[in-house]
Image (cartoon, rainbow, N blue to C red):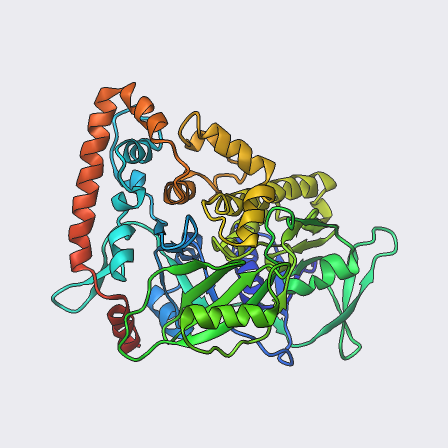
Length: 513
C-alpha cells in the first residue's frame, strides 16, 4: 500500500493554518491520499497584533462551515465594513472606502456597461460611497445585522463583510478546528536536501531528529526560514515606490460602554500613516513610517501628540516591502509574510494568502512527482502579478494633494510607480472599467474597480467631465443609473436605522456563548 503524500507546513499562525485547511479540503475533493503536518513551537510566544481582512476571509470560514458567531466570540473579532482614510488627500479631509459592491444586487438591462453606477456618481458630483449599504453603517458605527422581535440576529443584506481580529487568537482558533492535521511541537534548525534535485528532503528539528516530507510550505513570516535562508529565493523590492519601512505598534484599550468602530482607520501623518484596528476590547494600532524622515523616538512623540496621550510601544519593527521572485521554488511554497509584504493599508496580507492557496490547491495541487517546472513558472507569474497589482493599488493612495512635509513632497515627486501613472493617465481619458483588469486568478478575487473607485473618488483623482461625457452617450442609461443610485441611497439609509450598534451586536453575540 502506497504511503500518503506528506505536506509539511512550517509555522502555524493565521497563514499556516489557512494553508493547512485549504490544502486538506482540496485534497479531499481531488481524492488525493495526502497527510498534512504543521510544525509550530510552543517555545515561541505568539505576539498578537490587530489585523484586518477582506471579505475573502468570511467566504473562507463559510466554506469550512465555521459558525460566524463562534468565530467572533473566540477571536474577539469585530466587523470591518471598510476603511476610513483621514488626512490623505489633504489635512482635515476624510473619506470612507466601503467594501460592498452595489452592482451585484441591481438587475440591469442587457448590455449595461459595468461600473455604470460609479460613472454616474462621479458625473453627478455625488459621493461614490453613498450608494453602498456599508456607507451609512460606517458613518454610524453600526453592525450589518438587525434584531428581530424574538431576539434573533439577521443580516441586513447579501454583502460579505470582513473582520478585524487579534491574529494570535485566530491562529489558535483555526488550530482548534483542525481535524486530521498532525501538529509537531518543535523548532526547525535546518534542512536536509536531495543531492540531485536540491529539493528539501527533510527538516532538521531542534532535538536533532528529522521530519521528512514530499512538499513544504514556508509560513515562517519575516524569517522566510525555508524559502530564502535555505533555498535562496530572490526578493523583489518595492522600496522605491512604497517608502515606509518601519512600524511602531501599540494597543489602546476601549473604554467600557464606548462604541466600537466598524472600519480600519488609516490616518496619514507627517512621514507615513497610523492604523487603528478594533478588536472587542482594544484597538491594535501602529505608525507605519519612513526612517529616512523620522527616528523611532520622533515617531513615538508624533503619535502621542496626535492622540493626546502617552502610548506604550511594543517594539519598533523594521521591514522590507516587496515580494519573492519565486514564491514556489522546488518543492517549497511560501505563504503569508514569507511570500510578500506590503504596508497594511488595504489588508492585502491575509487576502493574498487565501487567494494564493486557493489558486495553488485548485489548479496545481497534486502528487509532487507530477508537479513540473512549468507549473511552478505559471504559479509564480500569476502570484507575482497579484502582488504587483497590490503594490500599484497601494501606491495610488500616495497621489495626493499633500505637500506639507518632506515625506509627502518626496512621495508625490519621486515615488509614484510608472504603472500607477499609466493607470491614472488612462483614467483621465476614460472612466475606470472592470475590463481594464485582466483575470489571471481563475476567477478568484483580484484587484479591480470595486476597490479603486472609492479611493480615486476620495482622493479627487477622477475627472467629472469625462464621466459626464460617458453618461451623455446614453441618456436612457443615465436615467436608469440616477434612479438606481437614488433608490440605493434611500434604501440603505433606512436600513441603517434598523441596524444594531456595533458594540451592542458584539455584546449580544458574546452572551449567546
